[in-house]
Image 1 (cartoon, rainbow, N blue to C red):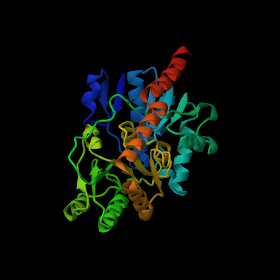
Image 2 (cartoon, one colour):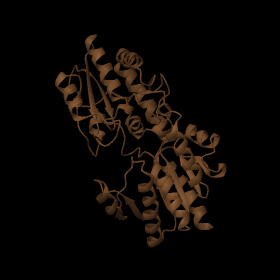
Image 3 (tube, rainbow, N blue to C red):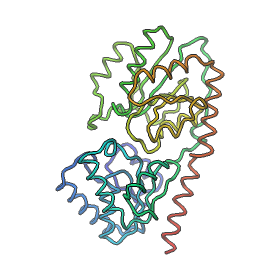
Amino acid sequence: MTTVAPRDNYVRELIALGATHIDFKMDAEGTNPFTDARLIFRLYRLIRESKPDVVINYTIKPVIYGAIAARFANCPVISVVPGLGVSFARSGILYSLVSLLYRVSQTKVKKVFLLNDEDENFFRSHELAPDSVITSIPGEGIDTEFFSPINRKPKGVRPVRFILTGRMLRAKGVEIFVSATRILREEGWNIECALLGFVDVENPSAIDWATIENWVNEGIVQFLGSTKDVRPHLAEADVVVLPSFYKEGLSRSLLEAAAMAKPIITSTVNGCRQVVNDNVNGFLCLPNNVESLVGCMRNMLLLSPEKREEMGQNGRRLVIDKYRDALVVSAYHRELTEIFNH
C-alpha cells in the first residue's frame, strides 16, 4: 500500500502500519487553473511510475484531478467524497464549476462512495457521476472498542461540561457555541464549555488565535488545543456540541462522541443530523442560529444526569448498529474484490 499526501504528524503512523508514503505537496484550497493543470500532470506521472493496481482518491481535489490523471494512466479508480462542503452550500460560479468537474472526472471510475444517503441522492439527482457507480457507505468507520465509555472520576457537585471538538472554523459553528455559552452564563447556569481542535489558519473560515485568546481571557470557554487522542477530553465532558452549518460528509467527531456514550447537540445540516435521533441520543438545533442552540443546551441542562446517561447509551447503540468500522471495511473489500476479479 502506498499513501500519497502532504507530510503531517500522521505519516509515521502510516509507515508503522506498513505503508510506503510519498510526500506530495498540494494546494487544497487554491483555484488557479494553471496550478491545477500541473497537479493533474504530477498525479499522472506519479501513477505511471508507481503502477498501482487501483487508486483510491479521497477529498475533492484528489477525487476530481486524481480520477482524471488515473484515467490517462489507465488505472482503475475508487472515489471517496467525504462531504459536499462549501462548494455546494449555494448556487453560483463555484457550484457550477465543481459540478462540471465532477461530471467530467467521474465518468470512468469504478465506484463513487458518499458518506451518507443524502449526498448519494444529490450525486444521482444532479448526475455528477454515472448512476451505476454511485453508492453510500456508513461514514469512515468507528472502532467502537477504542471509542468506548470511560467512567468519570467522582468529584462531587460540579458544572455540566459541554465540549466542541473539531477544527476552529466559523463553519463548524464555533462562534455560535461561544455566543450560546455567554448567554447561558448570563442566565446563571453552572456550566463549563471547552473547545478542542487545531486552528486551521489557512482555511478562509478559520478563527484566528487572537479571537480565541479573547474568549479564554473573558472566561467564556477553555481552549484545549489539539490532541491525537480525544478520549480523555470526551470522557470528562457531559455533552458534545457541534453546531456546524456547512454540509459535512458524516461527522467523525460526533460518531466518536456517540461511541463513547455522550449525548450530543448538533445542527440539522446534512452529515450531522444523521448521528442524532432528536430527543433520543441528543438534540438537533437550527444551523447558524444562536437562540436555537441555547434552547437545546438549556434542555440538556434540565435533564437529570441519569437521563443524559441514557441518551449517551442510545447513541452508542446507534454507532454499533450503523457506523462501526467493520461495515466500512466490508464495503471496500467488496469493491476491491470486484475490481481485482475483473
